Image: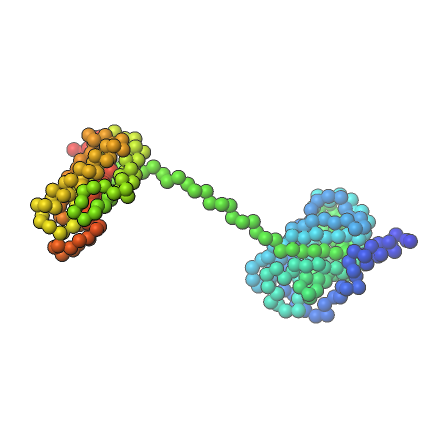
Length: 295
């Protein structure tokens, strides 16, 4: 068997050439540019990988990964190569990923320049797309398109975004006040488990600041049920209960001030005699005191 007959036989086996038919009509819908991997030139049946970008005449670009097979002589070593095809389709609306699939075509031309020659590939979606060569050169001067026998394209899936790294909250500014609210049951000054958890948070804020010029103020409050005098005493007990718990959580009692406001400072304005759970509270304020106040 002659060398040419061997090449043509290889083409028929690799491509199933009888199934490849060129499109009879169509419109140019865009340009496909593929960067071929470096390495030694092709011999019968050898292949190379490539990365491709499809730029449609209208719409967003699409990326593909692919493999090409050559049917021809060894062309030597090339660092890389670029192949550009015009994409022709029966309709201008082919959609994302439509170039995926297998392609095959004629391999008679040994040199293709500016679209002259027979290296047209047919394939893609229901073999309805035609790739017409525009530019096919390797950087070492070899025509890397000579003898292309088949090609397969797959739409490149973009890598998933990197996972978001949970960042620890920054320490509070030493000059920014932090506010914590501890709530109580009706007519009660006993701390609930939820209230104790809030107080622990306030104590941790004091420790994070690591500043001797700190001031912790606790203001007790009540709703409007009962007399002003009775609620004044109740708000004092609530403030003291929170102060004692802060001390148990490691806050120096010397920097804690505690005072009751009766129902003078409600979070929710109500009429007299109204039970409002958001007003039955003690408010903790953690703040820094300037070392050398101006004046």
